[in-house]
Length: 543
Ligand code: G16
Image 1 (cartoon, helix red, strand yellow):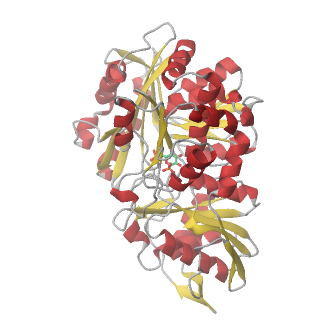
Image 2 (tube, rainbow, N blue to C red):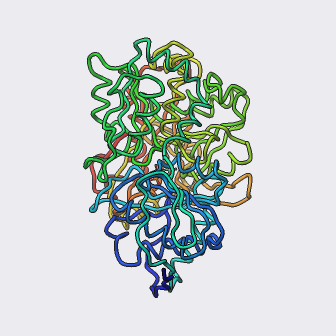
Image 3 (cartoon, rainbow, N blue to C red):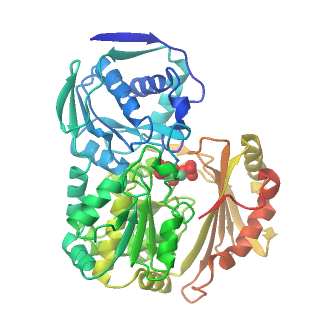
């Protein structure tokens, strides 16, 4: 076996976004593209010599080929031990768990998450550190710097490793351990939740439907929900993972999980519905006749987590990304625990979780999780919901109504304008930045601006500062507009407009969301001139 040192040249645009590098699959398949990025990761983390690393991905097109390249590059550079999911498959939370459980030095996760997959769609790669969480900005900056100067990479010339069954093999000097991707994760879930109570609920006629969207969670959900917890066979639908997710868009929201929404809003709907995304870290929760926004879900989980054995002792604190609604803040305030507002991106929660400052974290983008791993975790959220439902013996609808009656309701919606020409999107944001100083006191659609800024985060643990994380406009009545550009798209720019309006517990709790938010939507248009800059009359996706 020969170690080849391959000459290469720097490739433009390999800047990790909100969560790793995501590009069109064919871009990743170009000569040297993947190799350059993997070498840059290896260099940025100080090499892999003697290290133990985890490798897995969500099974999308190119997952299998990319895994072999990563293995050969790690073998060429002295890695000691690679722990790889069977067929190079691991959901993102399962990968995070394995890194932690096996005391690995980190791991490579191949996924473009909720982005569609296939040869003409998206692929992605990210590196997670020894705590199991996405590399911090300090590390991703280093990776990017390295991509700009790289001129060689090293790779072993050898046959593909057979990853089709658990067991041990070697590649050069490196040991490869192929593991069952589900077992350790399922064990962790059994430790956190009251499986007996959930089993009784499910066997007592409580019907669930979990839509795996032909993505990685299918086999995890089958094993946990159907095999271990006794949900009726067929409760997990679209359970077979496919390299192109069946041509679908594996993003669990009312738009992309439309089939599930129709079932849950229809006649004879099951009691509980849920969906997860491409790599299993996002979740959507729906009750019979009621969609639960991710922001509300975080608040309800935080208010009731103590009902699950793993969180019996209560929470140390709650963290949410800045655009996520402030519903969770009200729970933290009442419980007298810490509440943190971070930029978008799970990587920002890592320090808070490691320091024990936060137990639960969540994002408006359908992500919820806790300190059990260092990624958001779709099935975990579903199981915590089921545990709460089993303990409270109430429907999702009753739980939501009781929650709003106690804390008030944060009406919330996100409007996405996708594939906007980058220069137009940048111009919109730059114009807003220029206006921030003058907005206070101005009135738009009857709402008076109380404050306006471009969010800056000062990490309370490591002191690092992340600036320009999104425009926040807060109104005197507590309503809020946030605008930022997505960091996960692969085509043009995606403008995200986050809209929130608060009603106190003694206010209107049963308004239609669109009606409740109408003035905020109008104010957003008046302030940002979205139609003019995007050329769209309405958002492409509303969640
Ligand atoms: C990723 C990040 C999340 C973030 C989301 C949306 O999710 O892990 O923390 O909230 O992207 O980011 P953006 O608004 O920049 O598109 P995932 O599920 O895609 O890994």
